[in-house]
Image (cartoon, rainbow, N blue to C red; front, side):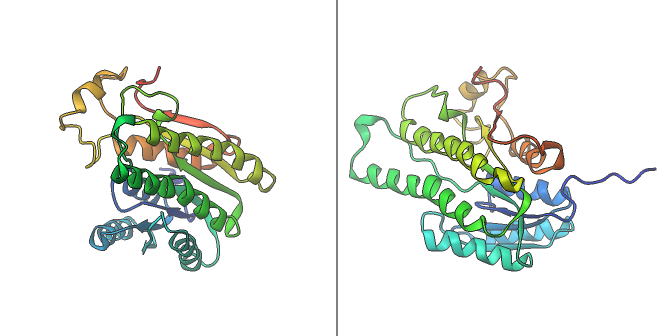
Length: 254
């Protein structure tokens, strides 16, 4: 029997927000495909260490680094720690960390405004600082993958305008960075999940049925659906894809 080559054998991957949900599954899928992985987490060290144990069990060298993506120093320091763990270079950066703050325009009181400010600091500035910091460690021919959202261009319900704006910024960063990194052979792409079954948006929750009904496939996505798209973009099969938006939403935005 021929030996099957894994898509990311020996590559080094930093996944921000990798202790839960989509980020954790991206980390697992990268490890399954032969990569070594560093994840960042904000609060739960126990949850992060549990993911690291899973990654190690899959054969990866793995590390969890605490970092609040809304704090520039944390974001940049996490990149430096990842690069040190990997021996000075990072092959793939996956910007997965993000939060969502919801509310209609008439609900934006001072408390909600503070939440929106933190969301922008996390989703937008956290991504900017992480990517800028990683640029000096990224290998030529490497990958930058941003986790966006279909709400960046398709807003199906009220109350998500500010979140949608943060994800629209991600799309434009992806396009612009594709130009910036192109001369080094580094590709930059955005994966746009739709409604996805996570602990914050469970497939058996009160809002699941209408979300599933909006898709062409009749179901919510899984973190694995998104993770497999990320691994494809991180692999050699996607070497000539850059500045692209890859939508993973079961057809909900068609």
